[in-house]
Length: 368
Image (cartoon, rainbow, N blue to C red; front, side):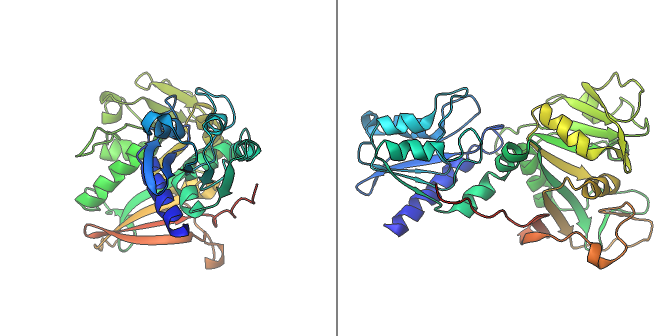
């Protein structure tokens, strides 16, 4: 049974991931319903405001009959009324024999209440199967719902000697086509993307999502400008598909922007910590910082980065004046360097992709 349980939960996690980039501010959730070894129905949460995974899975079952079945769900069924009815009482009324949840919902409005409601209704409840995988899948939701701040990914493409541009500022292209495609997948999965005004003026990126196999979701485009450096003759202002916001310490007008966020100053420009609060208030649950080096330095110095995703190309650029991945003043000793946790390295075309976290993983929730 344990092996079957893990197999069905792994499938539920696969289903949940189908909602990546589309469920914000909700979590990604998948559900598999099994009786007597046979899968009765599957479902996932496809988009915020639409039915939850459990409802979709029940609808896929013949006659909606799940009496005596086991329900595998990647996140504790909700017990509060939101845009859709709560799932815990919905399931309890259908009398499954057992509900297996990968993790407890960190939302304070739920936080074990859904599982407790099911137990009170006589349903056997188990929690914690593939919990680490479930928490990583919903790392954005966990961060936002527990802190009220966006989950921040710092991304860059650099040469093996740490350069993101040559001494002349030339940067197209540091990484290969496969790595650039992965970057567009990142954009597709996150709410907003942030760069500095120097990147906009030198590279003239559109900061949109372009995928070969499906329509992409364009993130909100945010540009840091602390020095009145921008002008409106740039792709981010000409190309539609997503709003473009400017976060600035300047009082200058920006008639070409959709929104101007007037911010107090911080080290190196805009106060990055306060900016994260402002973005969260505007519904941004996740943010991709694509640099350049000064912007990444400000983010790391402010302590707002949760995850790094660095692409390393098999190239040597050299040059003391070439732009490095993380600029700023930097630390004085290696003892002060920011440690990273859970590092994973994978091959993406000819490049390496290094992913890691700025904090150790949180301890699993206790049993309900």
